Length: 161
Image 1 (cartoon, rainbow, N blue to C red):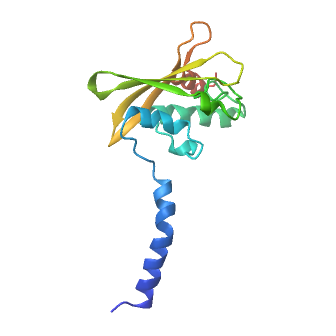
Image 2 (image 1 turned 45 degrees about the horizontal axis):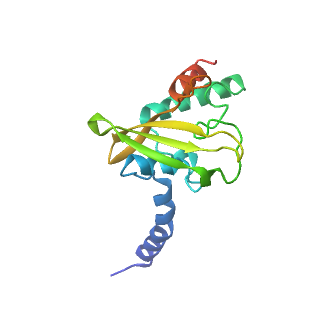
Image 3 (image 1 turned 60 degrees about the horizontal axis):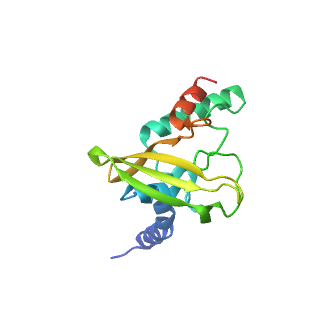
């Protein structure tokens, strides 16, 4: 016999299920899907497919930033565009290429124009399998003059630099 309590519990689960599903990080079945997710405005920062090690560096830099009450290295720009600001329509300029690597690892290169008249920016994502999908291990701007590696910047930030 179904009691009123059982019916209420089932109703609550039905209502809560979509919210719980959204809170759980998505699994990206291939490297390109993982990289495209960071450019999807519907994907919240907490849901971005970063590896455990990159998330730990990011958390350490955020903690140090809060302790110092100032922005530290790695947190002062958006690594997915290599800038602090961008045109609203920069996503229309995105182009991707995928390069498989040994052990199911991969490199995905994103090319974009942050501003309409700006030169093209190249961002390189290093990915590896983690769990049932792919995650981003690091983000790199390979520019010879202004290049950076996000994990190194976050490590500096975690030290208060």
